[in-house]
Length: 157
Image (cartoon, rainbow, N blue to C red; front, top):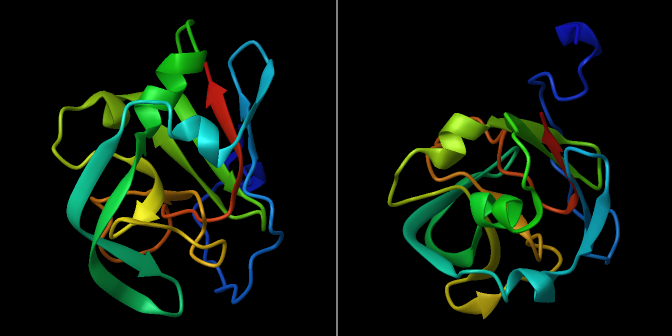
């Protein structure tokens, strides 16, 4: 794909004060094109991971935290639905913002994995906070990979 035509080519993102919708259900698209509807409740039956001393990097709002996030590793969600080979995953917000993460990064051992968080400091996140939010603990400055208001996750070959 030509980087200029790529909707996930790194780009600036204006802060959004309000969620695009109240619905936190998102679509998971696996390699063969099949779609699965994922609800926040569905995430809670997958293995639970807690990451402490983690920060939110938000465009226009700076860095906040530290927080303790509870959720499921993005890799656990992928492994629950995808059986074929894959190389990357795209996470896209309801407002069109998104990021791409390579399989190697998700598979690398770490005590702070990339997380689909649904709790912050032991409390369910509000829709304003994302309700389900991609937390990338290694990101400290840019806010280019911490996606809230997830609407679609696409697993790519």
